[in-house]
Amino acid sequence: MDELDINGIRVFREIVESGSFTAAADRLGMAASMVSKYISRLERKLGARLLNRSSRSMSLTEAGKDFFAQGRQALDILDAAVASVAQTSGPPRGELKISAPVWCANPGFARLLADFRQDYPEVRLDLHLDNHMVDLVADGFDLALRATDEPSSALIARRLCKVEFHLVATPAYLLERAEKASEQAAMAVILPNYVQLERFRLPIQTEMPPLKLDAIMKCSDTTLSYHCVLSDMGAAFLPAWLVDDDLASGRLQLVGGNEPGFAANLYAIYASRRQMPPKLRCFIDFLIDRLGD
Image 1 (cartoon, one colour):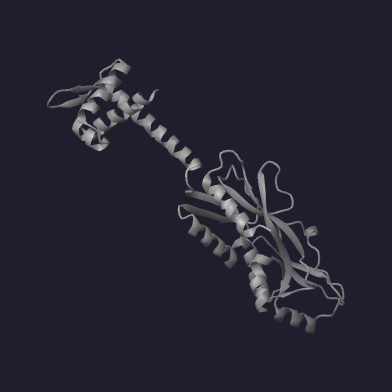
Image 2: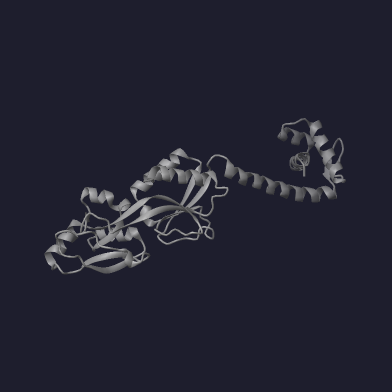
């Protein structure tokens, strides 16, 4: 259907919805004579009269009623398609649905999100914190942030930075353990239940007896593990993003040595490079700029 036909359909819709040629002309910002021309051309193209009109009244013909119902629906679909394409080629705007680890709930990451919103105020963030993998396509996510050494080959993965996990505990817990336990006693530790235990290794220790660990609890929520450590329950492997401020203030201490228990690469993972919407592209570029090694 050529441009004239589409414009004619739009004019016809305005006439029916506004109730007159004059009102439609006012809405469309054109002369009433031009409105009449559009309708005449549309009726000739269709080979049917759409409107019964006189100097005092106007009504839809039977064909006009059917064409109005279907033409309005077609225009709505077309307008939605145009808006969808505009989302992929215009300035960053719209909702961005993101999956991220629970340990992203920290002041540093919150400041990062605030800075992004400052730069891109028309992008709305829908953030879901979960330490388990999500199905991007099935669950409708635009992006997932994941700390892993083996990103899925079926998805696109952009490396952002390395995140270190430290074995930490409170000074009070370490003091109590030193006073009550023998050197051979195992240290109570809280482990995440979503990571293979073989991945954890003890920090490098010097001039001290080998450290043994007793997994007293497994937990899927990093934030709960963090608060259990702060409650003097034991030690835990926690990401540097979550505990750096506590280590600097002395609220928490490294256990065993300065080396991390393990480190993982943080990736931005998404489904496809093709027709990437600006809202997703700008968020990934922002993360690379702020977090990139």
